[in-house]
Length: 114
View 1 (cartoon, rainbow, N blue to C red):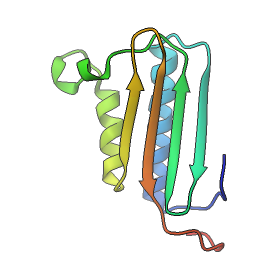
View 2: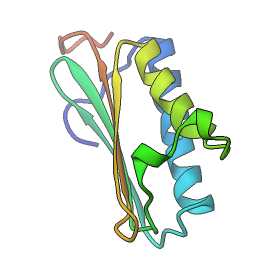
View 3: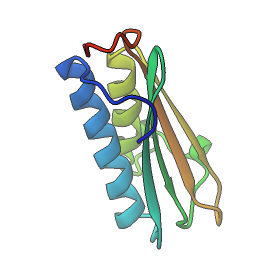
View 4: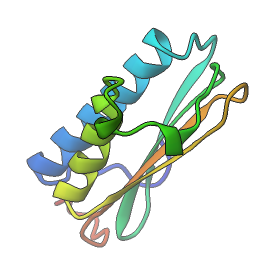
């Protein structure tokens, strides 16, 4: 964790938690990762969640909910980020692991929490 941790609206906290859970489950269940790291960065007006693994990776452009392959977790993570005004970025390629970053807006740090 970097920055000054603070409480966020319950809906934001829940969506970030679920995105993180899904990313870790995917790394363990599908990617055969030996190492998974999770980072939370509290910045002035946004929270960044990063989940990085050293697994087998995949081609993000070939994975969608419409291809019949059952990869609904990635779609769900993107939808969860968007529901709280954020975004999800997936960087992966076969043989080089996966880096998932969810960015969600927060109120500016005031020292009092939100």
